Image (cartoon, rainbow, N blue to C red; front, side, top):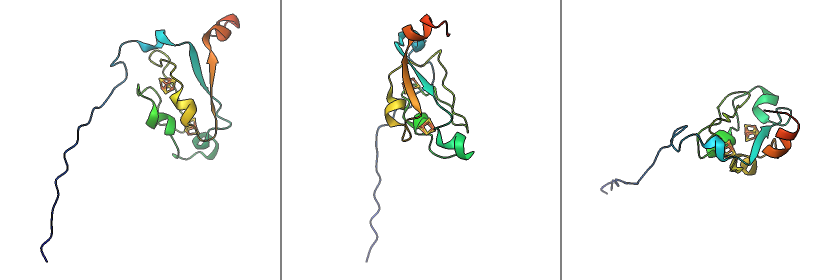
Length: 102
Ligand code: SF4
Ligand code: SF4
């Protein structure tokens, strides 16, 4: 029996931090990570990182303690939606400004 080989051609776009400009200025809500609920931080293992995977602006680091570059985070909230442990909370920038937090 002869073996059939398939060649699959797909389109792919790759994104990078800052490709859409300084998107941090668009932000109305800021994602804040509670490391006490974040699986890699709790287990000290390179696991999960769904926030890194799903962030459309590639601004979350893939580290034991994930970090978000607020210069480019547009506050879309996808990371908070995808986080399986609900470790990411979206907080209003206005609320943070009133508390004097940068
Ligand atoms: S998705 Fe949530 S639990 Fe997973 S690495 Fe990100 S913050 Fe941590
Ligand atoms: S809110 Fe989360 S998913 Fe959206 S740009 Fe910021 S870090 Fe990325």
